[in-house]
Image (cartoon, rainbow, N blue to C red; front, side, top):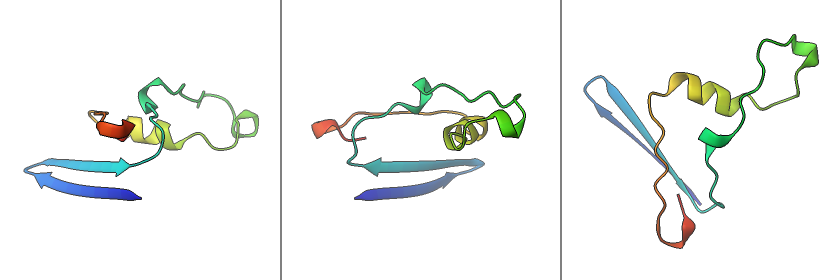
Length: 68
């Protein structure tokens, strides 16, 4: 199960995602080398990169049972 909550507070937008998957810290995931030509890059791996480019803050609270 996954829950997504979006809240607006003035000029800020907060998106909260809660799921029951194993803990994963996207801030520790290595960023892809986007300076390489497209044909030399691995397929995929840009989702976390794009999120990190547009977000001001990432908070990963741990809840009972290891959920995020």
